Amino acid sequence: MAQAVRPTGAALHDPALLRRVSWLLVVAVLAWPVLVWTEFNPATLLDARSLGATWKFVSDFVPPKHDADFLAELLRETWRTVAIATAGLALAWLLAVPLALLSTARLSLSGLAAPMRPLPTALRQVVRWVLVVLRSIPELVWALLFVRAVGLGPTSGVLAIAITYGGMLGKVYADLLESSDPAATQALLRNGSGRLQALLFGALPECAGELVSYTVYRWECAIRSSVVLGFVGAGGLGQLLDSATKVFAGSEVSAILMVFVALVWLSDRVSAVLRRVMG
Amino acid sequence: MNEAAAVVELRALSAPAAPGVPGLALRGLDLRIAAGEQVAVIGASGAGKTSLLMALACAVRPAGGSVSLFGRDPWAMPTGELRRLRGRLFLAPQVPPLPPRQRVVTAVLAGRLPAMGLLQSLRTLWSPRDAGLAQAALAEVGLADKLWLRVDRLSGGERQRVGLARALVSQASLWLVDEPLSALDPTRARGVIDALLGAARRDGRTLVCSLHQVDVARERFERIVALRAGVCVYDGPAAGLDDAGLRALYAGELPEAVPADPLPAADALPESMCR
Image (cartoon, rainbow over all chains, first blue to last red; front, top):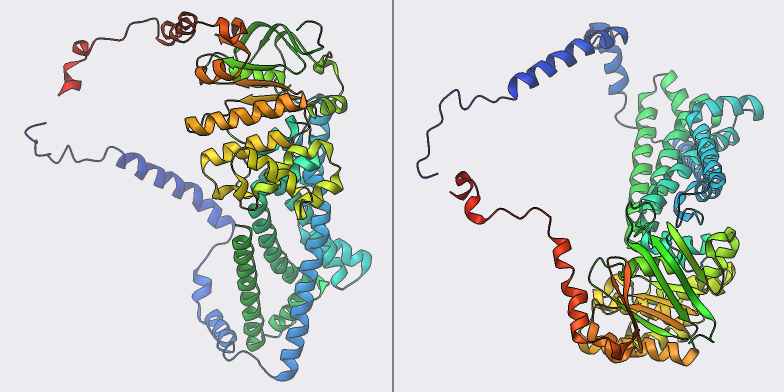
């Protein structure tokens, strides 16, 4: 337009504003009972007694405990935690790979040129349910069961991680295979390759980077998880942390937390290096 | 032509363009191709060239009519037998289906997977024993120096030729090649089509090749099949297809592409849009 009209106050009134304010009010009204039910009361954090206790605990964090005996124990338990996570994830991987290959539609021969036949469809659905069951029960619950069955110690932690993480890895592997570019895999299947050959020459090179990166991330999660499992007696850093917090040994707690951060940082670096190598 | 065994026999074939796509891309197609024949398929975009190759590759189930390959109905076969039949044909799509992170040597040798066991495939992934075979096929399409590179280092035209090298190493007796020249310059295109035809004639393979380059089709192929709107409008020797017939083949598409309602003329546009 040739002559710009100077906008008046009414023209500048944002028509979306009323709607946004109303939504904000609705959310606040809905959120209020939730906060009441969860006994959310920030004031308890600030009353003099809890402030004093927290301060005493936290001020003990510095310096972290570093005498030779404690460091040796810390190193041993760190190694045990890494071992629990690695062994658990390795077992989970063995469980997940066949289930993922069975459940992914990407490697279906019967679904190549027509809707998949009823029998393969049903089989894939059953495998998907198995994966759901495996991962829907938290590893903490599995660990409590296994502690009863095989006794205190790392074995129950390893088995708990293997089962839950097997379900997670299997589901995400299958999804990653299905969300990658289908052209390479389909072309191989169409030209008479077997399913595993199509996986090796078509699907894996398409999504190897994502699969590796997700697996390393799950290893990181398994380390965190094995710490939690330590609280119920599965050994490792978690058990150490459990006893340290129970006696308010702030310097030990801070040393253990620093190890956690170091482990997560390490897995981040491993993942970055692997992804660069896989290109 | 009749005494040789038919490799392909289509009777009144109708089929969608891809599985699950509504509508028909082929509408009642009859076609018979004998063993060892080389056929060019021409036609305007959307005429059904790719759909025909997809139907021949058992990549789409017919909606009507029948397909017979090597004298058998593929859709009456159990899955395992159909897989063995698929190993006897090779479909090279127009866009080469090569994973970007794969090495060229692996991408080419993937054409031999139907003849390999699982252990041998793993061996090939790790360190290919048949590198010489891949190298020879790459040399035929002018890519002899790319054997050990990764696919994502190649240009579009080079990838297309890697896809054709994969066809060259495959042991299929029916090659279905979709627009092999679409990303190539004219000189390169002639070299590639000669390599394909030469290999097919040498080994007695049947070749069905869709082409946009009508001049190449008439020059190099003995038999031409022309499609329009999913039906066959010409099937015979290349010499029998004259310029008038070609004009009809390609010009005839226009009235169908334009919607029935005429577009509004420019001066009929609302004034507000013209300011």
